[in-house]
Amino acid sequence: MPALVLLGAQWGDEGKGKATDLLGGSVDYVVRYQGGNNAGHTVVVGDQKYALHLLPSGILTPECTPVIGNGVVVDPSVLFSELNGLNERGVDTSKLLISGNAHIITPYNVTVDKVTERFLGKRKIGTTGRGIGPTYADKINRVGIRIQDLYDESILTQKVEAALEVKNQLLTKLYNRRAIEAGQVVEELLSYADRLKPYVADTVLILNQALEQDKVVLFEGGQGTLLDIDHGTYPFVTSSNPTAGGACTGSGVGPTKISRVIGILKAYTTRVGSGPFPTELLDEDGEALRRIGGERGVTTGRDRRCGWFDAVIARYATRVNGLTDFFLTKLDVLTGWEEIPVCVAYEIDGKRVEELPYSQTDFHHAKPIYENLPGWSEDITKAKSFSDLPKNAQAYVKALEDMSGARISAIGVGPGRDETIEINSFI
Ligand code: GDP
Ligand code: IMO
Ligand code: MG
Image 1 (tube, rainbow, N blue to C red):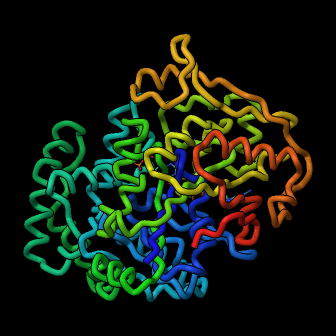
Image 2: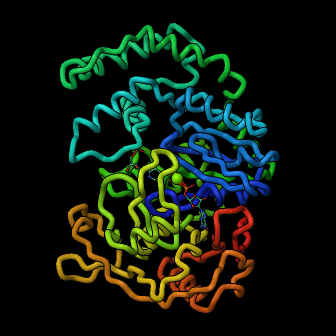
């Protein structure tokens, strides 16, 4: 019966890992449906901190079956090192399922990602350099390599040769790099086949049968709404669909099965990489948000750009995802400011604009219009219910809810599993 989607409402790093992990105890399957190891999801359990990149956060909950859906791109070497790391810490990963239709991030996809970024120079996207864009490009160009191809050497060889034909021309003639040998790539990919085999499954069938049997399935998005290839700040986006529709295409579960769509929303805003960011702060407030919020990339270690909360973006996320609920995270980070500015609309070429402009040029020109909300100084990390929060923190949450277009059903007041205020239950 109930399928839930949990996704980022901003530019990623909203705290999706923590939110998924929190629900993990009540769900049967946690499914990644897009992206790859560009994601970095932090989960804190007691005094243990886990950084997950490719594996769904449900891997940390023993009762839960973690699934890598067909929409994900998989770097097998990264997958194995993540599994090894978890096994060394005593986490059982044997239940993992991987779609045979998921595409493989090949070594040449990683090379092309890095070389392309270097070639773009000042116009670079600021990718994570993990081969994500080139792998999805190969998928759309119909020259991608899928997990199932590892089990037919002849097909794999033909596909790798076909994929390298054009790439080697580009690498040698345009980028001045050495050509990549198809035989070596095939050999490397085949070396992953045996270890992957026990995990490979018909995940579309398994998930749909699970839903027929009233099991609870949770879809965990990577990245965020504004990084979506269709609905984000193109071209400064990732190459997949983190938005709610991506959960269907990336898993083979139809939209009629989805009952809740939960947007993870940071109480302020961050972004990694290039691209427009209207509420970005380049002053000491931005520095303070980065320091207090620990805003450093889990995957690349880059400092995250920080800014005030942007309600225009939250409203947009509600619309394009059909959000039913928000999970507001990192409210504790805002403790100590006397006043907290919140962006309620933009000024674009002298006009007040309430909704996200579809035009890239307009968005680049958008200046935030702020409303200042009163801050609080009390420690909120021990709050267990909404009424435990100081009055001004309550008012801040209520104001965000009114501006954002969906109810706030949970509030994060710290990174730990138990540092959460639950208002409406998700399941
Ligand atoms: P994700 O990519 O959306 O899973 O988020 P990241 O893990 O990249 O970044 C979120 C960071 O915030 C992680 O370090 C989390 O441990 C931390 N975090 C999550 N929720 C809260 C919260 O409510 N308060 C605080 N202080 N930290 C949080
Ligand atoms: P999680 O799941 C934040 C950003 C990169 C870059 C752009 C494209 O932890 O929220 P890519 O390597 O995907 O082609 O890079 O997307 N990006 C993320 N930013 N959180 C992420 O994941 C991200 N994954 C990609 O910084 O700007
Ligand atoms: Mg992250």
